[in-house]
Length: 305
Image (cartoon, rainbow, N blue to C red; front, side, top):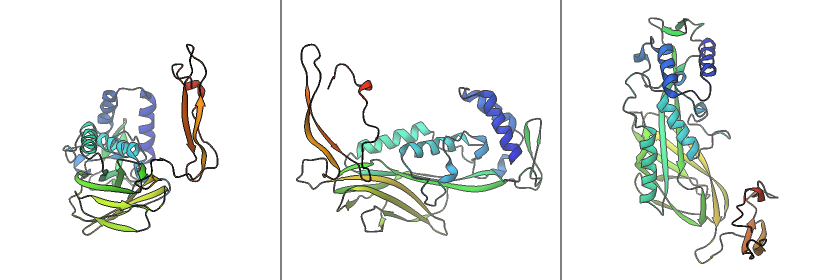
């Protein structure tokens, strides 16, 4: 595996960050052109593709290093799409089509927080594939050894919500079957979600909304659990921030950490006049000071305040 990794690094360096994808894939086809693609039964080979994300972290277990959001989710899907070899994954929808579908579903469900999920199995070379005699390398090409399997099978699971900053106290969530992307042929037996409202995991029904009420604001952990018949049971989690308020309140903020509440701020004169704006500043949960405030240098002169 070290020799394979070194070979891949040398290829990436030689082409540079601005290399065209066509040249990259031509090079990959040269390196992997002689492998037995039928051994890549999942249709995805990690070393063949472009990893836009450390997909190894999102293996179906929860940790402090694998929080999921929309950007992470898309980078995982695009990475998998670039890893396709042979014909097993030829039917995978292109990223542009998937992202367009997600946007369409969000537009069609303006008052619902939609969940988008992906669960894929992929393969990677075993750590000792070369030293163990599973493959050989000659003239920058990889060759299989007859009767040997050089691959380990891994999984990646990721779910993200369409909204992260929630204003209110009751929200509708939904997971649609047309927003689950996978290459497994196993049956999904149950979907459970812990919405971080103190109720623990709750079973949800695909294509149906579930209303969730919070009794307080702040950061919440959204945990999703997929259980497949015969296994596995896999997990993904995201962070939500609930800006808690009841239906009759017009304030966006709950007053926790309030620094200024509708303070009038008058700008400097520009073309003989100045404007005044009302500013409310509240610290986020767990913060005792402002972090990354807006800098005057990025303000437009048309808006001097």
